[in-house]
Image 1 (cartoon, helix red, strand yellow):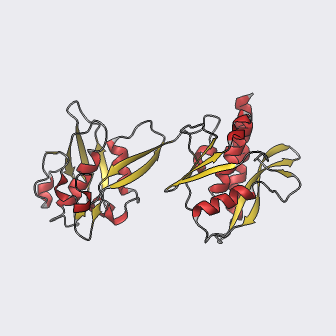
Image 2 (cartoon, one colour):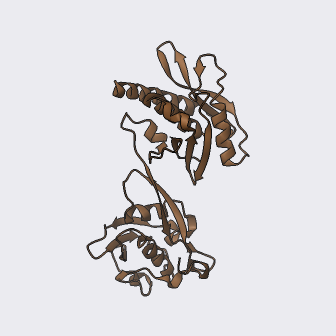
Image 3 (cartoon, one colour):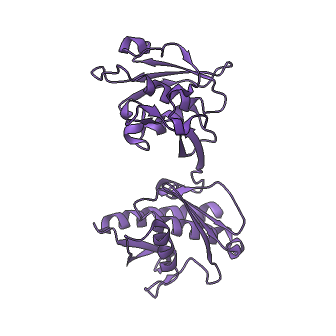
Length: 299
């Protein structure tokens, strides 16, 4: 029975999400807000279009959306948020949002809580800065993050975990490294060197990524018994790497932040870095604080 309900919810969500996409406007202030709606074929998640002040701080925009979810205009729509459920806290971590409701959230049935979480997620995903949402109640925790794709799956929703790891991007102003806490949301249960390197060049770091992000990952091994990781990268042959040793140590120092990694052996296009005029970068390299800026030294 539970699986049937969730699959029905899935189909409804797929239909609505497609509908919302088709009717969206170019205005950042007009967004869909989701409710439980009564149709001829039964109840499902539906939406109404509402206007919001897109110039407000992100947390204030989130609170505005939650408040709008309480007051449907269509007589066939029902709020997913019970009157006695209050918004306790809003936390924003980059593109990930955590919504904490009051203890009354815990009184909801599994289906009611799932509908509310899905409605909140769909409504907040209308805000362009938000990619993942977690809904919790009272003191309850959990590590289930929902995104656009996870809602549209079947009853075995994609379960995402969020990790924070210290990486070392390149400051192009002084050609030094600086420490940066990078937040990674992934369906994997643990962070691997491959995931970290992918995230570093995926756009989070921009031009501060090693080699300006202009590289592809050919392979990154798991650490062996000695903690050594081998990373083979493709960097365009026309790119002059002379004097860019700091980019190699951006990779090395960042991957050494991963559990079990003590050294990294980087090759470029299958060859040692010295063949691209990178000095002192051949073979296994351990964490090196030489390139850290003064304010980041020892972090």
